Length: 229
Image (spheres, rainbow, N blue to C red):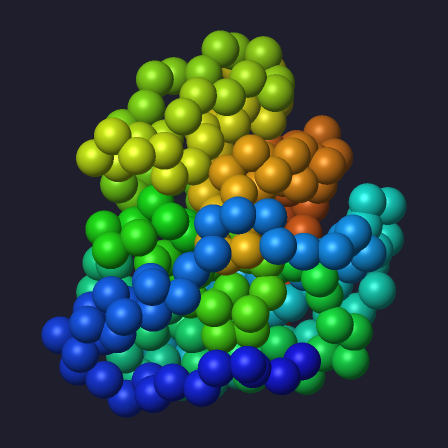
């Protein structure tokens, strides 16, 4: 899987914020994709003692959610932990994992935020713009914005608002379980992002592609810690 846009990663936090503001201008928040045949879930875990990160990407047939391929990459984290600049810390190792894919996904789901970000450019936007692919952020916790609590039944949702703008939806994926935060990253609307995420649910709180990617990278990290990787 190849990048459509190349950018620098060796930036200071100030330079990174400026780059986010520039790249935000490239974000498309309307549906711009053909019928989806394959979707990819991506996540990252890191070893806090060594600062080595493990990125995992799993591609699924859609909507069957049958696994097609999984790839990983391991890299040393170079960028410091700075709130709002997650993609500059995790981006290089995620791109390395995506580069190893033989199957080209039609859409990317990642554990993180997209438009619901202080500069409207979370990691889902960043990956979407770099690959010029539809991308969706599926986050387990709130980063920015305000919302009302959705009803307790699975499928209930309320708008996530930032400065009065709808930047995502708060989606209850299981009855009376904490909701998730679905936000568009690139080339997809808020409503379509929610529709795709609902089709990726299989009875758990987290959509299958990102949940399994999370399990994958956790296993990689444990294997590394025990000397098996």
